[in-house]
Image (tube, rainbow, N blue to C red):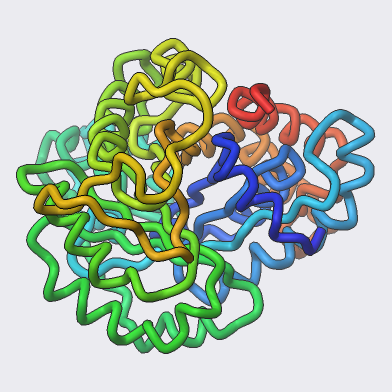
Length: 398
């Protein structure tokens, strides 16, 4: 499992699957288990926080997955020789993906019914009746979704945001375990983006892939064209991540509509590179894409263009309307969505397994370290089965 051809092939063929562990999610046991399960289920990319400890946990899980690959294939999971890209996320300014919830539990009224604890999808909020035990937000479990903020009846919860410093990311890029980066930016932050890009550009040639994530807004397409102009001289595969409804975690049919509509908008812009959905993706996303003909091999495609993607430079329009040919190292402009990234939904899907691992760790007093997923075969293959139920939706068209 050392061949990186398959993930790129998945992009070209339109069935790329990315797991988003969370740019702020630093709970190492959960990250490790999620990585292991989704790798064995056939994921193409694992996107994690730019944290050395998180990266080490992911690399360890990938090694375990390599050892279990043959067993997984015998059970009908995964694909021979497939190792997902390891991606780290960074930001050029304030972003909801890069924050943590905070509050002082001593300020919480004793009669509060604690809706924050109930609504937290990461189980990152705990209260204890014993003063010597912790109460509040477990920082490493919080990934900044913000659902606890409006539900607090006393407005006690706030967030701390942070920006990944370029000098901190460079050593991670230099490490052998990082294949890709994702840059979270927003319309109007060109100066900040350029500053970040300049700081990391000496190392980007070592990367297999760069993804750019930008929420929708007025002037978005012009902004993305400008970003492309700033990075077009480098040789890597490029993904435009359409973050339709950031940090939603909702499971309804209507939730994924924003991600799909933004994907259509970016496809229509004919930007060189691949288009991948995120933000609001869930169990309905692939079915909706297929029904709308937005996946390769399903219907007529986003632009009413059946068959293979357009040849390079044909039917592509530049920022001001002129025809142009993208640099040869960037991909042709596809007429379909090339992949889907799943964050909150993918984590929630496996939450029963993750919770059971924690219970077994607490109850087994003979074990002083974290209970590892691979050491619990029954839970392991349950987790892989759950992960595969999501991955296979996208891979079924291969």
